[in-house]
Length: 48
Image 1 (cartoon, rainbow, N blue to C red):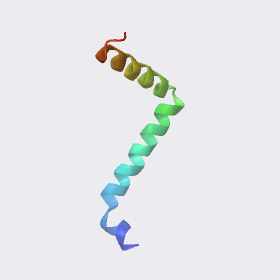
Image 2: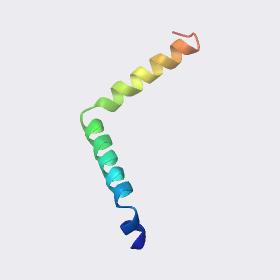
Image 3: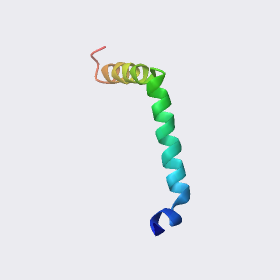
């Protein structure tokens, strides 16, 4: 329990980050980000 007492800020940031990721997945933004990442990779290696 002392670990949580010492790292309250880190735990809060972890929870906020997880909530933001969950909201993004719920809104369907993960697919958009993945599509953009694939396009950038294809352009970098010259296949697109």
